[in-house]
Image (cartoon, rainbow, N blue to C red):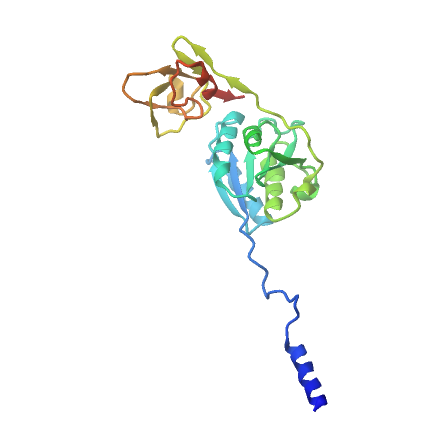
Length: 274
């Protein structure tokens, strides 16, 4: 009888799975997302080449676009777009921004991590300033690791392809972002230029227009230059319309807020990142 009981116990132990057994397939990993913005335009192949580089390194990554129509070399406009978009993406998102008037110079190429656990691959030219001031800085690295680049020789004019896109793809693929290169403790910062209060209202500069849409507002914001009508404004004048009919504003609320412009406290509502 005892040998039979021992045999049954042995069979039961053999058939029972060990306590540390792992599932047959690993838990699903969230699809990595790369959010892409440039001033390349869409009439050439530059943005498509960058997307191809990302797909070659991180084929599972989902690539989404903010815009490729940033005014050429306008760091201020790109920084404003980046600040507006990032709150709607989850932690782990990789933002790739190539608006880089300093390409080919000594400016650094960076991977930046915010305290919201989002990653930013971009030049060290102030693009990240509004986001970091709002979300906080967790760390930054200069991209110097050649394994995070493509090609034996990095182009002096197309770092979007050779440096930024492959680096963003490596982060999206799950590589340790600190392996991009040495730590950077000080970032180039955009300094806010506060608008000027005049007898007729507030004067400042428009850094972007919401064409073709407008927003009803008890203030008006008219471009001071006719050349700005097509969406590339060089300046604006915000004037009080208290008591008048509601008019359309051609500037985002970030630049000309709905407020009584007779108050000096509204100066901060119309400012430009430069």
